[in-house]
Image (tube, rainbow, N blue to C red):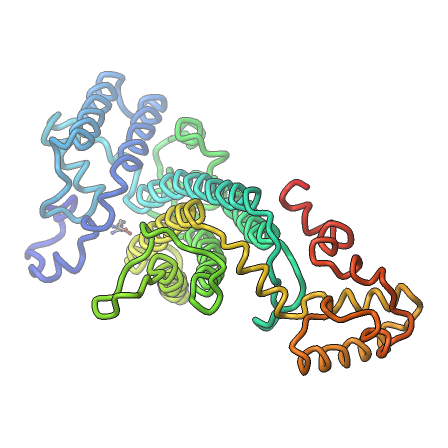
Length: 442
Ligand code: ARG
């Protein structure tokens, strides 16, 4: 069933109908489609293009369709080209001839553009809320686990940090993501309704009315751009890709930390699975899936970038492909953020194992060098001296703090008893590196 057909003499091939329909994908725009139509009707009445009676009838019809969809009485399916055709044809079925006036001074090109902007706006707010929940989960876990752990570069133990500070790094990433999505939201907040197919309309419409009713900041400045701009989807999908990259890095850490090699954390059973053959296994599947799905979100971004790159102005049917990519990327990022929050909330920190890893890793070597500097040794010489101490410790199978002052003075006679306090792991954190504690409110 179509909204057009006057200039056609033959039916489309069945396979073409299936190929062309977007209803299986764009059905989720029903709310925005009806909201856009309600605003359009109000504007048409305001501009004397419809009588108030016609406006009332159309409004009631649209309201009843919305009600029936939401209550499950009207299922969005059937032989329709898209959600716009579905709503309009049901409207005419319900209220008769007046339904055919709904599309006055409008094209599906500005209709789909306004539907998608409204949808993207609402969903961007949902993404921001979800980022905040994730930040809250990380913050709570960080506060409750302000325990000492090894910090890494090159995945080699480097210096002491706290688990709280480590999680705090991810908090910062997700805070930046929130700002990024907020910026995209600000840019997309323009109303394309009224651009028509591409060149506006000869009817005296008032775009300010729909702009106010749909709560957009302003109408778009250019009609051609208004119907063919998909930048905001690309921008949001870039933001989703960065969020996924952050989630993936965190997932990778959770996978490493929960391995037998690290044993820094224990993941809740609820987000792990077992092996069908190896009874001892508890696999971090949720984290692995998040890491895996990152590629899928990047893929959606690249698919849409590629779809758009050669398109002349203005609307081209290629653009129908935008929704599948956008919806998939959006659903994926929302799911992954929720699962990550829950994984963070429920994981247990094995503080003793983190502490043991510090002891075995010479993580106070840099502070031994700092100690020597504080006694007047130039840093490069201090670095060299500590290197030699490490070789000695490895041979003796001892940590630096386990050496006696006598042993230590063989490397530098500036060393005395006060070195032990200086290189004590907890002291390093509380004394020297105050910034490490700041993140978690110390
Ligand atoms: N389903 C179409 C899309 O998503 C709606 C716009 C159709 N416009 C057109 N001129 N055929 O892009």
